[in-house]
Image 1 (cartoon, rainbow, N blue to C red):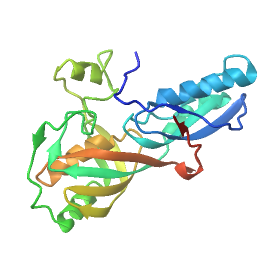
Image 2 (cartoon, one colour):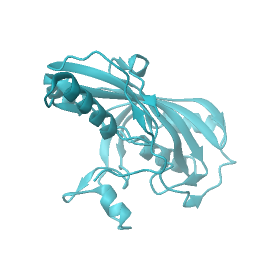
Image 3 (cartoon, rainbow, N blue to C red):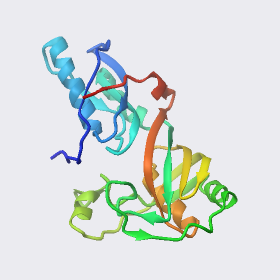
Length: 235
């Protein structure tokens, strides 16, 4: 069952050209809607255009509280989803230092506060540099990772504490264009499978504090840019 969010964004899609046999569509996913919402809208449009069901899927989930580039594949291009998902990704956003949440973002309220006044710009940039390269990352419990046949978030919502194995990811670039504590803006270029929410958690810990995401935007997947994406019409 699709999870509902308070004040879930309602939107429609503008007219766009599409080849029902094989095509790749770029969308700028709105805040507080799911990746499945966008795919569902495209399926409906394809049905109206060609009069029959057309295979449609997205190449990489984007969290409901994130915005930005969502690649939707139509027809034969759905066979390329795995290839597209494996591309390098770029994200921008904001960390809120000095506080954590169970989901590492704004889906849940703050559960613990930490000091952050000791953090200097030099410390923050040095900590960011420490993430560059191949690192081990533990995905969030509030995620779609499968654990024993269930999604991790199913355990989290029941208050069950389960272990999630770390996996290797690669951070290619980690920049901090704005440091105005308690907020720190970032730009991260990373490999497939990277959870920016986990970076928020680990970045705060590396600075002797806590941290969570207050904004996240995916700006690029491989050579595809959000600048070229179709922007949904908000209702």
